[in-house]
Image (tube, rainbow, N blue to C red; front, top):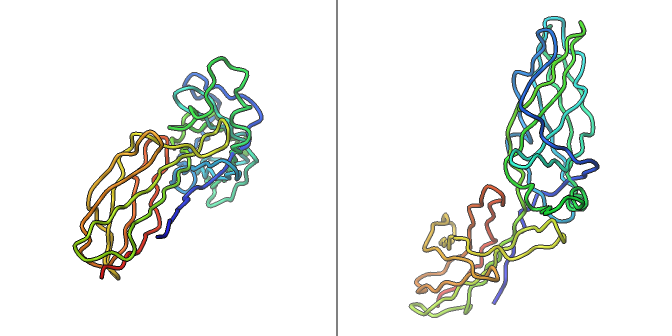
Length: 261
């Protein structure tokens, strides 16, 4: 009997000041504008319980006199305005007479998420997961500047882990195979992984050299546990697959190979 575990957690985040989302607006002078923004290469920002997560915000900026710099970038949760994230600075690369691509580096430290808002009544560190937005201030060579609000939307998600254990191994053909597992996700209050309850997870199977396909689904119980029984018909591998939510990453466990005799 073997237990397999997959921890697909991209980690991160250092917070030093409470960032509250301002009313939606953009102000400045002149023709400088941010025309395109890509956060983390287009992927979700996944934060676990230990490692600092660094990610980039890449902005295409245009002005008729050329772009001088990005002076500040901020990011925060759309729903509650909280943004426990540090702006580490930015650099710009000229790609044309009027255009530059500017890259800002951000980081989230899970150890600072809870302290960031601990003085606020009803504070829940995990509530920062979900949809975030980006604001930035850019400057041009001729003195033009623009405070650009809501130039991009992205998701910050809690990391998750998922295990698979198929038994007995080996199993007789036509016998009953029981596949268990556990789904957990990062808790930023105590920096531990807690059971993720009442979640639908797919049980998948593949023959040697084949591709995984879904056999059935199961729902996690009050301790995050999964359990399903299937009839053993051929040797192959079994795994659990969780599609994720708005606030929690998707995760697929490592397959557990079972020989059918």
